[in-house]
Length: 306
Length: 306
Image (cartoon, rainbow over all chains, first blue to last red; front, side, top):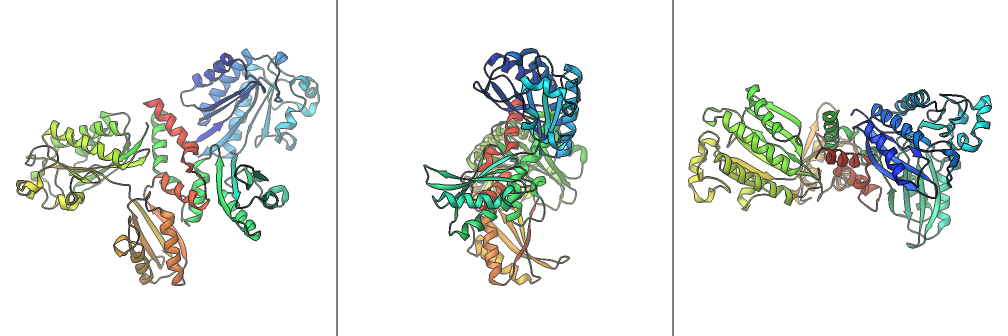
């Protein structure tokens, strides 16, 4: 495996466990080089989210098989759930993790989109980094009107799909495919119970407040620990790295006489996000990723499988 | 694979490429769960060093096969080379990398030692963390006198081997097996060409000078860059972490009005050594290793192979 990409398909089925399993197994059966990291089904949303890892070609094969299995088993005409949805397979983002660029993931999204249209007569919209217009970058904009309003929406020439027929698939609707960056959820805890300070710091670091381009942030009060927290979504940890945001939060907090008592990463994080912090603080003269023992092993293990 | 262990056998053959290849292939053929990361042969030393990675049982199988192949092919009675040596397979250290402790590696060393003695009638000495006496911790002490003096040395009851017969194998001598920690070579470059400052800082941080327990260090002048360097061997990066040494070097350098202009890791480094630095500087409330995406993949990939 030369590159490592994450793929997080969302399917419109979260109640019938045997259907979810069949759709999952279709993906895993299509390529032995795709690994399932996580799977969550929500019955209220009537939706399941899978986290796959693999290289590009393997993931495109797996997603094609998965969509085929979902189109066969999910009928949106009778689907009910709390979460908005446009299709049986609602959205499929490709996310670069290691050794792959945003451009690589855009290419994969387009390859998958073309295949889904051809094989299943499914209309496909491209979103985020793969979007073909500014308006289509935002998933919520594409999904507005949901499956029920899709026929009317697509009648407007502005909503011709990027691939496939000009009208919805009768039972499977449409699928949104795209490329986005890895989102790191990162929280910094302050040595104060004054939430207003966390709010002010959040405003200072977030993009809309004049802060870092790839930062979303808000102040939170951790009731049990009586600590104010700056809760952060890092939407591009390569361009806006964790350590830079940490140092800015430290400096802003100091101005209020407050120190940072700790921080936490929520969920998964690419190794590169943490190595960048080590590289920065230790003033390493080169990116240490190529010297990490575990990475040599990963490369060798996948070469052997490939 | 539940744990990741490095094994670095040194064999007394660095000239006959076909012999080196046969011995290497014996190790790789014994277990498909052992990976060869690196292989270096030195004709002057007449010695080759292999770096294998795997879990414990796979490495013990591979090393048993390797020693068998080496005993068949190397005759120390006619071996000449610049590097001191005691046996056809001179030394086999096990090094914990991830998910394994020093105690695990001591267990592996003893298991391998017992096997080599039984299968090949080879005397085995245990060294470093696996040593059965303080005197045998040091490889140089065990190796003193080399193959040529081994018969006389072993006649002394103080030099009975830990496993196997009380006299040398006629052609393969003896093998030293042990467990040691991963050595990280780490250099810190100072914004001065005054080597005396690097010398003083090296003295301050190294164990024998009153510094950190797991630090060896010396001052060096980088002629081409006109920079003084503190050249460090970190002999236990878990107990004496890189960032702590870095901060001490920074503080000592400042006292001389000098700053740190950069640092470098030479060769391979376990991921944990760098994650510890990220954890320290970002004040993470938990070890982030379990959240690293690549580690999930590594675990899954090896589960699937195992």
